[in-house]
Structure formats: structure tokens, C-alpha cells
Image (cartoon, rainbow, N blue to C red; front, side, top):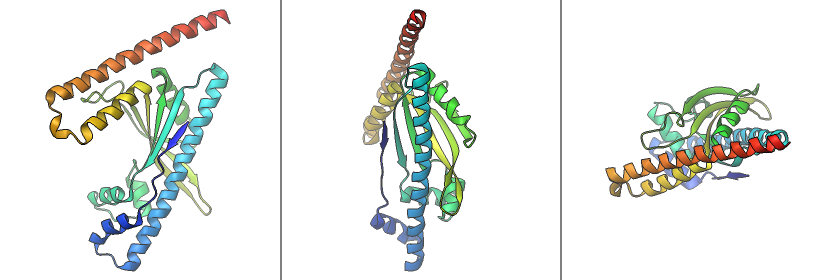
Length: 234
């Protein structure tokens, strides 16, 4: 199951954010045109990654009677965020600058059942011939101080357009249902309540992440035991 948060570019918001750059009307329309084209490129990159993962999940189920992926989500960074990140790097907005200098414009979040599923999906995806692994951060083996856990990959995937092929980076986050549950609620609790979250509450959130990590390990142990007995009976 793929949940795609398909946010279209809001022209009025984009025009407002770009007016500060003192562009004339023609320049502004060129940027808006490129923003729409950029979104189309990253939509295609997400489809490429999502399709690959969907195929791997189906094949794994056929071979092992188990779907490692519970569901997937995807998102594309909003146009104002892209321009601001480029400006911080001292770069003007362009399709080329965006693709070459920003790795998190497109994101796919893969929610797995068990810990071993995370690493299996990562292995199967990154060993494909047309996928290039640019970066890997394992926040499962080394969680963030907050307790956040997830495996982050930045991969480059080819997008075949009508007249050219673009090599596009996509950030892939792979985590268990428990990790996603904690991350979603932690973000919701802290997003608009930063002033109310004191050190004790931060520690409580970190403790909750540890508890969920222990549950993940226990659930995987139960799953492996059941799988062992099924194999014995086969």
C-alpha cells in the first residue's frame, strides 16, 4: 500500500516567496515553469523507487510467504523550502542546482514489520544495477539522542524523460511500524509545543523510544520462532 502525499505547487505562495528576489515578470514565470517541471521529475523518481519496492515486496512474499513492507509513504519538498535551501548554499534556483545539491527533495518512507525486514529491503534495493547508493545513515544501530530510530538511504535513480534521462536523488527512510508510531507522535507532540517540552518530558519521550525498540526485538523473536516451527512442519 502506497500513501502518496501529492502536494501540488501553489502558484500564489510561490510568487510571494520569489518576489523578494526582485525578479521581473518574465523571470518569475520561468522559475514557476521550472518548479513545475522539477516537481514532475521528482514525482517520476518517487514512482520509480516505489515500483521497485513494490515488486521486491511481491517477490519476497512469493518466495518466503511474507511481505516485509507494511506500507509506503512519499512526499516532495515544497517549492519555497527548495529555494531557501539553495539560497543558504549561495545558489540560484534551477533544476540542475536542485538535483545536484539537494538530496532530500523527494522522500519515500518504507514501513516494515520487523527489524530484519529493514535491512533486507535496503540490501535488495541498493544492489539493483540502476540504483546508486549515495549515503547511508543507520539510526537504528546508533539512535539519535532523542531516541529516533530509522535507516536512512540516499539513492540515485534514473528517470527516463521524453528527450533525456535524469539521475535523481531520493531519500529513502526504512523503519518498523513501532519506530514510525513513535516518530509520528513525537513530532506531533513537539511541533507546536516546544516551549512546553521540558527536559523531563524529553527524557520520557526517549524512554518511550527505548521501550518500543525492545518491543520490536521481542516481536521479531516471536516471528522467528513461529517461522521456525512452520519450517519444521513443512
